[in-house]
Image (cartoon, rainbow over all chains, first blue to last red):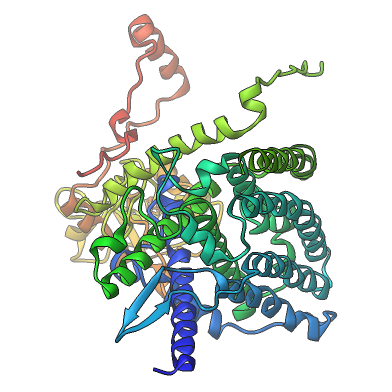
Length: 346
Length: 219
Ligand code: SF4
Ligand code: SF4
């Protein structure tokens, strides 16, 4: 088979898959929220309300597309695109399984194994803030601009602990390639723990997950769209499918961040204490590794929802204080200790 | 006087948020699991706080003030004498009554000597205050339990005599008629009565206390 065809199939597959997950996530979020709040949530459209996202999609598509009179038209249109595109692209370097052997050809379950995959993800993560700030700016609305500004300040603050946590992880694995990091997590650590990143970098994981919630603008750090303060923040003026793109981009972002967490800290496609490759056939191993990976990702997706409906929103100064006064010193300490440990053991 | 400010000292575990967040997550998880399980049980009313409206309706208090009805007595005669007191009392001025003498040969249909030739309530204006019911000297008009009053045209929201009486028949068939109201005692009598009852009636509440209870989940 042609390498090109394989690459295109992989791209299309992961695109469709992420889209599907994002769609289902909107439903999970609404029903999960309802159940946590002693309600039922949308349960009328289809079995268990599963077709609700379709109904929402139809609604968003058929709504009137309004561009405010004094908005900057070009930037206004560009905003949602700038927001959702990086979210999708970041998925390109995340391995979603080990490898599958079809007709004697080994296919790696990853769109492309870039050797600086790590940096690519970080760079694209910071790109997403453009969508927010551009959308907020172009709307010509005070709440939007406030939302955009908050988002920028928040992202810049949390990029630092995020990057430092990632750096410590890179030190441990000695590589920037996400696939190599995944492979390195096989086996056991200290003889009895699965050899996962979380056991080597517990503090790093904590910093990473907190920063990830801030990066994704999720509760408790959803200040850019704090409903009770600034209406809907940067997407106050957006409606119809443009708003849809923003909401959708957020869920794709969650997928990417969850996948990253699993890849870095939760052993990617490995099961603890079990080497699936040893007793599964080449094709079933490929599928199994994908499923294991996805199972872990879905746990983190659910965690996003769960935390959202548990924790109240932080005050703005608390967000900044947490970022600069706690996370960054902790991240620096973590980096220092990790480097020291590696120096001493190697 | 200003409220005294209580300085709360947070413990270390509270200040690093994590423990408290985990505690909160355990709590929300319990709620989630409870409702998750409940939502799988058959039947419409499985999550205790949710009434799945069209299939599953709340129990309505017998003194609920909903759609009006005009009562008939045991012989099936209209009680209303068309005096128009209700129209006078109505704060929204949505009742129109025309009084007429009972026509010859139709005495069996009406309880009084006079009757209402036409009777109309504009439900679009009605505020369901219940004053009409309170003023009616004959106890002929009563607010029932019907609350699904949305219609497609304003004409359909006019409550005519036919609908008023059929509302009564439906309510009687369903057994949702409220018990007849006790006549309001005149001021002097009321004071005497209260004195007589004195200590023994103190603190005891009359009235349908059971109706306040929410409908139990039909598990
Ligand atoms: S309903 Fe009562 S108050 Fe109204 S017209 Fe009839 S008798 Fe009079
Ligand atoms: S309930 Fe009140 S507003 Fe409605 S018809 Fe009776 S008196 Fe008028």
